[in-house]
Length: 201
Image (cartoon, rainbow, N blue to C red):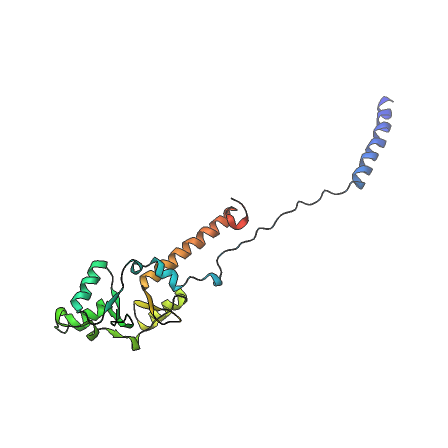
């Protein structure tokens, strides 16, 4: 008898609980803020000027007067540990380039003496040069070098056509590797959910 009384009391209470649960609004779904990724794009492509700033040539006088002797040129190569110089006239205008390859092929193999030969006798003349501008992309510069089998590229100002630098294939490769390392770091930070790209530290 006592148990039936408890059962009758419990049923209305359970009914009220069920009704309340039925009308209770469902909990709002959690809101997530989408993260955005602002990694490197095509528009951010590195340029020849970026490679120039990383080049060993930027710290030295990379020009040589084409009236100087080949011996003077070889001394410069040895002193700065480079493989090519831009040749200029007395007014500083570019007349060509001269490289260690020119020395080997046009002096050493032909039995000439470097002290008795002028640079202009062995240099590649400006009319036959492949050049770039500081604004050209590193990718374009590499294509030019590979298509012509050259290892150095003089940089000419796009307006004045004056020589403003010289880059090597080594400079281009180093620049691309540096940029890839930066891109990898950005992607790693993204994966870890940190970094300025996401507004967090």
